[in-house]
Length: 273
Image 1 (cartoon, rainbow, N blue to C red):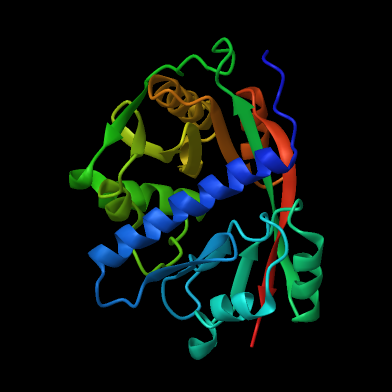
Image 2: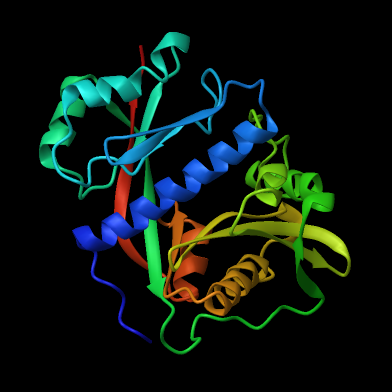
């Protein structure tokens, strides 16, 4: 297996900068589809703040603090995206962010809300992360015509079979209109079983939105979805793939089986008004 990339500041800027850029593109695409929703993306502090509406779970600040110190007035300007609606400021904070920036966030009352583990793998070696497709499983790309179906399947999968969380936008609809993005739907003997998404940015494949319905778990479908996205990434000339997981989860284990290794774990910091 090709050695994993070393998690230094250069790699962090590549991964976090790409996530910030693709998230901004998603937000701007959503704003064009929902013009009356108040959705907006505001760049600043080396990253971007995205707002989808009061306290919407998608709203977050990404990619900040990796270009050196951040002036407090510049950070206050980003916080103003959220303060008028009393929405919490949620920051995906890379552990390689500037120390002074992190200290400033602590002074301003930010606390840890959760953790997310960032994994990655090179794509310039042999295809050692691919998996054989399980019997009866078919994975195919979907477009705008089946976007809402994809959103429903992924949403129910994330909810462990329950009612999906409510968001300001339909994920599939936005992705169907988003450049450099693709959605995949997995079926078992024709029955929808799971879905996943991928977005390409400057040679890096950002893999997200993967979920499998409870009744189809344990059959290798999630791993097959990951392998299918890795093939897409290679075909489009990517040299690196990124996948965020919850440490110790089934998704983490499946990512490791597909060649992903931990780059770092980042806290999600939250400030409430």
